[in-house]
Amino acid sequence: MAEAHERSKRKSSGGLYKPNTKRKKRNLMGEFSATVVDEEKKTNERKSMGTKKKISLKKAEIVNVSDSEGKAFKAEIEDVLENPANPDFVRRGIITKGSIVKTSKGRVRITSRPGQDGTLNGKLLD
Image (cartoon, rainbow, N blue to C red):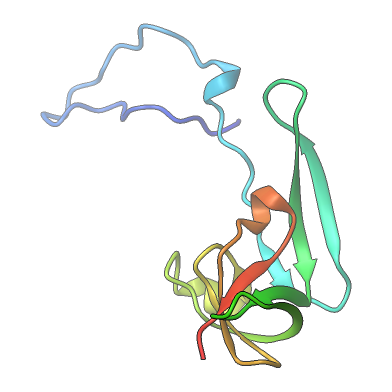
């Protein structure tokens, strides 16, 4: 069964809320796209609200990096160093927005949302 954005089924006293509506398609949550470091680039396209489509990035090895002067270049990802979303993501090598990765040019903070945009963009920290 799909997961939805809903309030808790329990009150703070422990009693049950009586639902006044049933689940709507608009309240369903999207799937989590676990972007990992891999040699081949792989994307997945899915339908979103209206006529739009979202591209989620599944595997990537290159990140678009911009430095403090505004120059942009590409760098190879070597390892995931930190991930404030979940410490377990570091062990699994999952990249999300806000992750800090080690690249050939130095440490980079990911600024894009790879599960929504389909690209990896970052800002150089060193």
